[in-house]
Length: 233
Image (cartoon, rainbow, N blue to C red; front, side, top):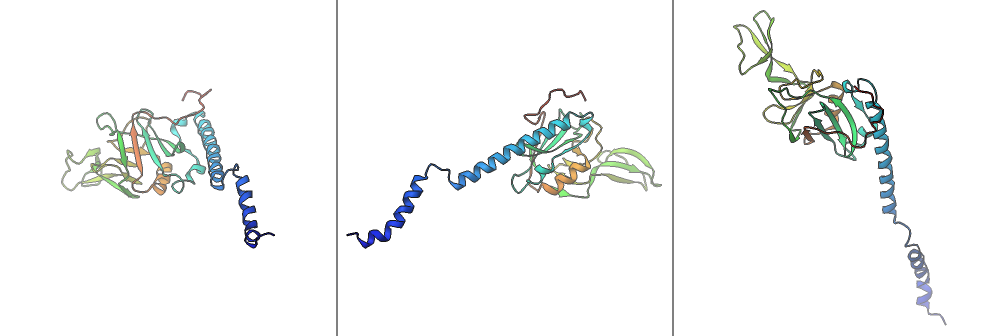
């Protein structure tokens, strides 16, 4: 005679037996995690290939590298970090080890060196002008000093000081260092700020919120670049 309670629980016991026998299969969560890891590795490999191809072109140092696939995952899947390399006069927008932007910069010249260290974006203004550096106009509106420092410049009667435009301003320090659009001659040339191309500035401004980390270092290069047969710039 079979007990009725055993008949009732036998389907449950059968299910438990089946699940136990399949315990060697990876759980769904681990499977999804592996999928994400594999996708990331493919994305990283493609990113390095695209960046290496960009750097194999002539005059690449004057141009901006953009990987739209990486920009799409910032900041929803990976928070952005901006890295500035003073030796290379290059800037990078990164998402972990992935490089979304690689662009030329102009950091501070010898008499106005850009500070190194770890900073964050503390202010953003699409339209902004310097309150220290600019040009002096006379009473007739003619430029009499194109590279004026307001702290030492003499403004003639009827004249005025006009601050240098700094579009897509992203402040890093309270004493006036930040990232902004500006002329990039291929060497350190600013009063301490980091000048960046308009293309890079627009994308960074739209994607990097206040609080975004900015690392200014003497030297930095993306890891894993394929540099064989690269022509000299």
